Length: 232
Image (cartoon, rainbow, N blue to C red; front, side, top):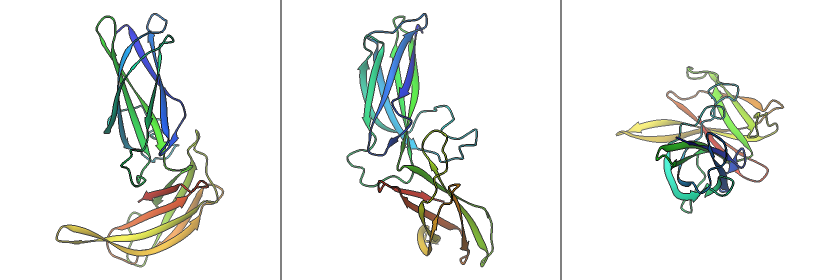
């Protein structure tokens, strides 16, 4: 191909419900903008991964693999600077509830250059449900009835660097699954409340008073009253 496509979101992340924006830049390999490039855009949404930002495989540091649930298509044309702006809603009109995970919107842009060669690129827009991420991990993978489970809860900023967020109220609801005729039923076990420390971390001791798998649902609300939920 004689041209290349570069994608850049206008912001590091958007809140769920915002209108997202991404700029497409088309340039010739020998230099200069591609004016009037006809671009095909396909947008997909997939659940965002909540991994440790210190991990080299964290979603915020990995390359874009694209794919997901189809959301929208559009055709755009590059301007005199070789650029085009893509805008799309991060919440569909029929979305009645906030998703259980953040979302990664994968934007696929393709075109055919003057030599009739196909060129494409994928960019990503990160959509979050609140001002900070909420995650938890059990420090015990196997316990006996009556043992205490050490559940580590963590809140981190969504800004680059993912610094700890202190003083956030978190509610934890515990439950277990019971199966009857190949159908699972959640049985509530208890509710715990905690507050994250200066390092954005808090440890909660939860008694394992039931045989089987225990599930943890976490709830927190940021200063703009946006709810964060997480399931472990």
